[in-house]
Length: 385
Image 1 (tube, rainbow, N blue to C red):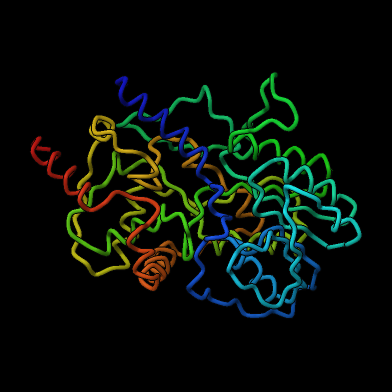
Image 2 (tube, rainbow, N blue to C red):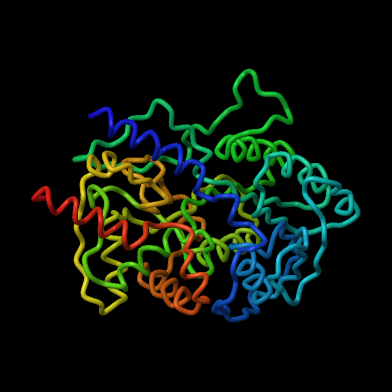
């Protein structure tokens, strides 16, 4: 393996570790302009009192809507800074960096913690809620897995065995002190330990991969169905056989509610689909939902590294050979995780993007510009491919 590719993959692992569920997913500015499909109300589910920590970011609104549609009583806790309007719920205004004592005098059947971006937030909320609920569900990340020492796939090889959900997670270094800042993967791993310690036998840890679908403010997956729909020659990265996993935010959030309904405990991965998906398959799925003439030009990773093409920003939703791009979801499927057809996710994302204000589409958060793509394709073409 060349030195440039080793550095390329090292960068890929560092970036993807921090972006599986990035802080921006809970940002107050997350767009929510398109209506989400409403699930049918069912009378077969025993109603529960649910507290959702969050509720107005990317994955919050559908969690709330699905829970309400299934007859649950919902309370949300947010800082109150988002313009997203959530009807039919009690809304507690509080900052998780501050006082959480208002939760001490309340009880809920289950708590869904879906916006913890700092382990100290989890520290405060678990202490405030440990006697107030029978079940705490924490949305972690596959970035909690410790991958140092693992080998990455070569450019002409692919990972065919999924990373198990029993894989080791990060542990704090010996010099780490309570209250210290922690990088994303470590803060999720510490948070998981805090939840289990406060709720022994009463905790559920859900580790999503890349969360995608309508209303995604990061544009990391959105870039691909949009770009394929535009047609023409599309710059496609590396080996098309490398693994790729995503989870539609609606599949994730609806499963979270069902886990709370069923009282399911344990640690689970949450990404998809149920069987292995390659990056080539993902692009083919995007092409299946558009009639635009399109041709993919697969460019080797050595060229991308040479041209300093940035993973996750220039080429989003792609981390070649990263073990977390293929993790086991067998236990999760057995616990009720289901998946929309990939084409539904791609089409709904594309239609949502087309309904966005032109100003938002003009400044998408991820993906290379068309001018940069054309430049790279021309450079690669001059090499004779």
